[in-house]
Image 1 (spheres, helix red, strand yellow):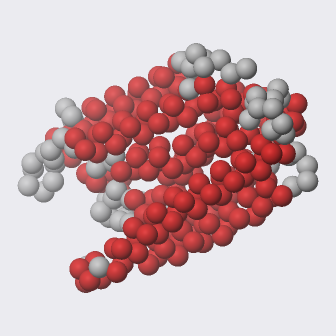
Image 2 (image 1 turned 90 degrees about the vertical axis):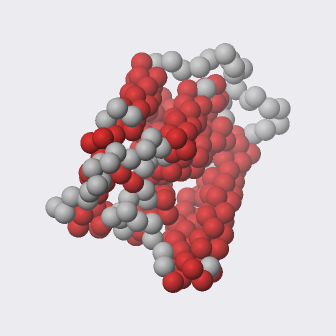
Length: 265
């Protein structure tokens, strides 16, 4: 059974999140004078963005540090998929929304880097990075290795988070030099990613075999809930969760595209 008192407090997890939070507090607090604009005035402390940034760290910890991690590692593929959804959607979205423009400007404003960043953060590349990363990690060999090896599992989650940042960048870029794409491009981009992720969903949902043997041998937490049922539920969580979030994002993009003032802009 799942031990609901089992929370991960490993130094690399807690220390990494504390380090990120400390660096953000340092950059947006005592050191924000370094980010002064042409007028030499330091930007105000971004209270709303700080709340989003720290909320992203909390969501990430809940995904990988709570008993949900034990459920996903030892018992249910569907629980593991919920983990991934938390990392890819709320954690990554809040992280990008929590970055002030002036905090990323020292990197994005560099003339030498801008052509490289422009190509790297192109929607086609961002979508490809996201789809390929998730698809490759769901190969039975790698997925099984992640379940057996803690370092590999950590690498999997870090790469999922990084791929999610790529995925959301064309919509939520905090950079004035590399701003979010136009609403029309955003809608096409989201539809393209949904279509590109369909083969992975179909493979998980309609495979006649249990793709990950560990879950086939795991103790059943729910009576009559077979490994095949668990695999189908995991695929549904992946696809329906992704489609729901994409539908919301497409709706927001459509509203911005339809507004006359946004068209003039």
